[in-house]
Length: 93
Ligand SMILES: [Zn+2]
Image (tube, rainbow, N blue to C red):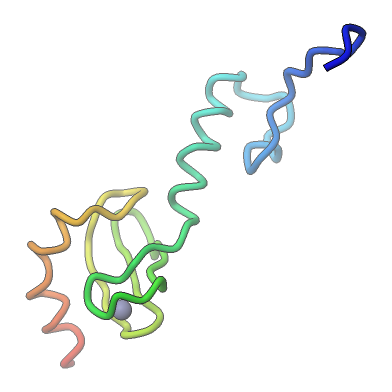
């Protein structure tokens, strides 16, 4: 980095749509959470990287069509085992 370089404070990423609004810290937090909720996760039923977030806490696998609940913005292994039975019922319908 050159001595003359300007220190940039602009936060890019998905929070870039907010422009200068809502404050730096809030935009940084949004970037972290938004990246988590938009990411694809490993399906606990078919092991494919096909799980996307449907809505708040609802996750769907586009490979085996399994629908299960987990955390609002991420998928955790602990909550998956508890809802495995429910997802099986939904698949058979
Ligand atoms: Zn699956």
